[in-house]
Length: 160
Ligand SMILES: [Zn+2]
Ligand SMILES: [Zn+2]
Image (cartoon, rainbow, N blue to C red; front, side):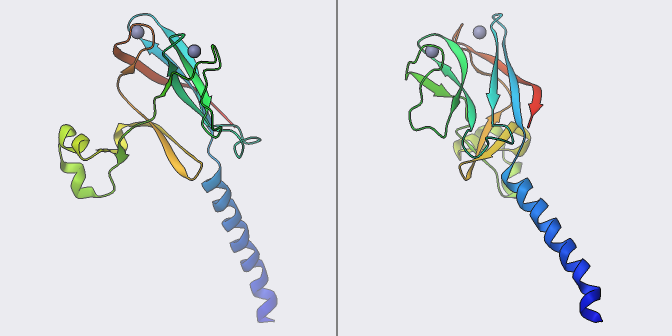
């Protein structure tokens, strides 16, 4: 009697655990518009779709050969520009890590940077792939056309 009463509960627990696991593994991909004050504009991709997120993980880079913002699959060993095949490509990934302790969030920006950290609020988007987070920060980035730090990323579309 007791056992048959508990079975639905167990099933429900297992189901919710499966949903939780899936969420942990899959996040939606994003299309980002790269926009610069000099007039340069391009679209880049971050992440992957539901069908291929185990094999592909795109991340925005810029190419110093053809001077374009590009998306490169960071699961692949060779990082080459999809437009000109150059290997002179550089990632827009944050070089700092997210602060883990509340106390450290009270530090000012330059002190945090010296520690190699940034606040969660400073992140535009973070993608979990290849068992680590890949983060793009808010604010200005290097523009491949005018070569100034005046390029911004804006999310234009989510996909799965
Ligand atoms: Zn290129
Ligand atoms: Zn520019």
